[in-house]
Image 1 (tube, rainbow, N blue to C red):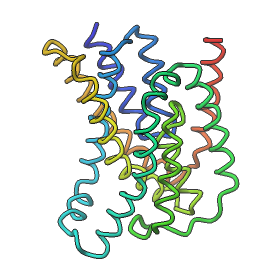
Image 2 (image 1 turned 180 degrees about the vertical axis):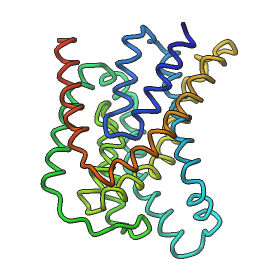
Image 3 (image 1 turned 90 degrees about the horizontal axis):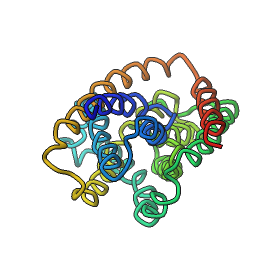
Image 4 (image 1 turned 90 degrees about the vertical axis):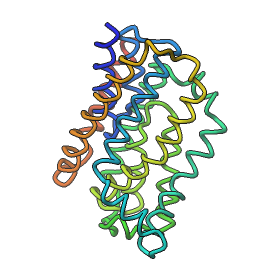
Length: 261
């Protein structure tokens, strides 16, 4: 049963992590439904996020390697500086509010309200955003990077969605839809590595050698499902808006509220 739960949660994490629908929210709800709760379950959910983020690293390995090996060149410096600036707001606020958020907001009802609010925000942004002016990830300005970083900080509230906040934030700062998605993917690398490493270090005592099979299965399922979704999502955004995700968020959030309240 533990392996079965690991597979289900690995799929949930991989499918939802990079879509604007909140992976954290879905993991909280899936864990509740599967009866997979408690400290060990929370540590497992943190761990499998590493599998999803490694899918992005693998997908964009050429860009990442060229940026690192080309450090010192103007283009590489600007790209890495943008990621660093965008990373800072959520990192700073996360350190300050981490315990409060974990204690008070990691519950289905809070997630439901955030899903609905985020869905409404997507509708508004999709119908009011100006014509994009940035179609190349290397052309993002420092001001735009900071704005996207501030938007990412909103995702500290469970259910908002890190991907949703950064993609919508990027579109507000006039990044073209696919460029916004790719910037969100790259920004996920330092953000999620930092967040998961911090959480794992705090919860390392919850683990034992007997947990290895369950954690390994969840990790690899998360990695491969995320890899599939990333490729499909990039194709989707070149032809469609995010309105379908907004509808899903509102309907899903309303369903959760109906069930729990």
